[in-house]
Image (tube, rainbow, N blue to C red; front, side):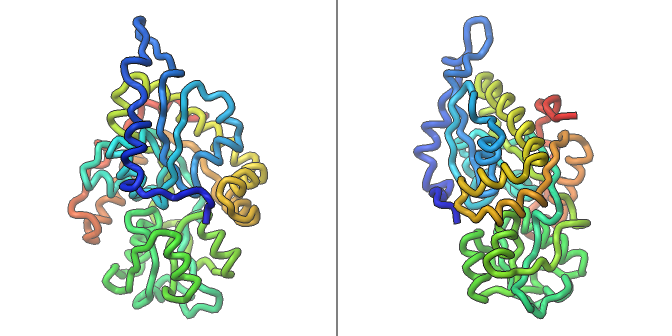
Length: 328
């Protein structure tokens, strides 16, 4: 695990709310322009996050505003902090915005990226009796609730005419799931990189099935409505999203350099981060109707499976104002 402190949304709210408040009228000059030096953006991150990516790409060298980072175990608690205005923006997978939207959170998807299908997989121990997705029936499977891995597990089960009631699901955050998987307390683990690569490296885990042909593999930057409505923070968010886009493109062209910095930030072996970086291959993409439709399909599937009470209208939780920043 990363040596950096992993904070839950609830444990850090008091501190983060103070930092997230920096913006507002003091940063807006009389002529309507923004003094970005007066703005603080609070960014939610994960182990597979934006901070090492931006650092590796050199995008943290000349930031004109202050960045405050807080690391979360997965996307759902990160978006709880975004909704609580403790975090301005954060990086998550495809499912957390669905769960946030279903809960009525005041958040918006503001940037999107495609990623490789191996970056999200269901892994099993070496020599496992589970050799086909249909074998998951009756198995004990670890997964983080509301995560992209939860979405993949849903899609895989649906394709096999199975439901969550047909197996024993253990909803665990990655650190706890890794322990359960390594100790043989679960038969399979649905998770994302770098945890997939970590399980392969440390435990000789095998990929039972990746995310190819199962729904979408989107990653998102998700911002708080309050940050988007604040002219000063909105200006900083635009610059931040542009930096993320440039860094994503750079990481695809320089996976080894990215892996080295990612290893330094995370404490993971560089062999793990290199494998994760090589197969991640993220690509910036616009927030268009195709993306909205595919997220809506995911939301409908979660609702039909009873994992969320109703299916939200995902179009209401997107904001395409930064689409002009997507590299051609």
